[in-house]
Amino acid sequence: MSSVKPNISFEFFPPQSLEASFRLWESVQMLAPLAPSFASVTYGAGGSTRKLTHEALGTLVKHYGLNVAGHLTCINATQSETLAIANSYAKAGVNEIVALRGDPPKGQSSFQPHPDGFSGSVDLVRALAETGRFHIRVGAYPDRHPEASDDDADIVHLKRKFDAGADSAITQYFYDIESFLRFRDRCVAAGITGKIIPGILPIEDWGKVKKFSKRCNATLPRWMDDAFAKAKRDKVEDLLSISIATELCSDLMEEGVEDLHFYTLNRPYLTRQICKALGIEPSQALKKVA
Image: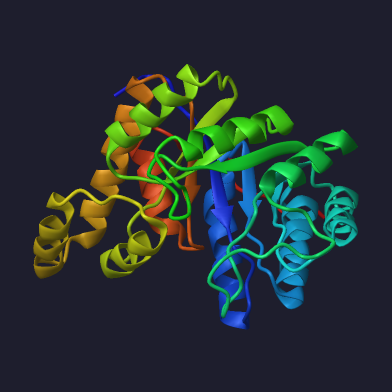
């Protein structure tokens, strides 16, 4: 394992119930003392979800002093409405945005731009860059995006986002390091010089991960199915999950990766244990800002 500790960051999602609120703030209390370089908050297509995202962002900035990156998509909004949301982020002290096209709303099989909206993530990134107010992060896909026409399409699209003004990219999760390394090499060959941060998903529920991976075309090594079946039998699934993610992170660091982004699903235990295994300990007790 590399002796250099990585820069870490976390993704949270806004709560939609009282119970979910407790889970989010428990996650923040547990993970913020690990001094993440930033914390991102996801964003949905509905108005109520957007409001919840804004409230969560404001709380993380105001009461926990975190560097926050708000997700922003092109779904069901005009350009002016989308940029107004970005402006509200800035007013709340949010200086980073994860700019995404967004998934089609329920009932739609494909992305349909709003008649007065952005055509996709490239146009959104360009508009945000023109404001000069944000550090812009975008998505990247080591395994082919379900809508990509071929293996090169994701690379071409990512380069367009960097050329439009993106500062860094966060990848979809993966469990085969070779997928990421091949993707990184192809990005370099295409002239992409921006930072590409691996996305790490600790496996809380193997069945759910398998189901979601089919939808997003994330490749799962065959051995993992048998490994989790045995771990479930022996009631050591958490230990297996921690081991898999820790080894993946260690191997990435050996390959020169300096930043790791954890998809926490607002369930902090596994992420905290993985960070501990990587030598990342709480820097101090978390103190809420008045």
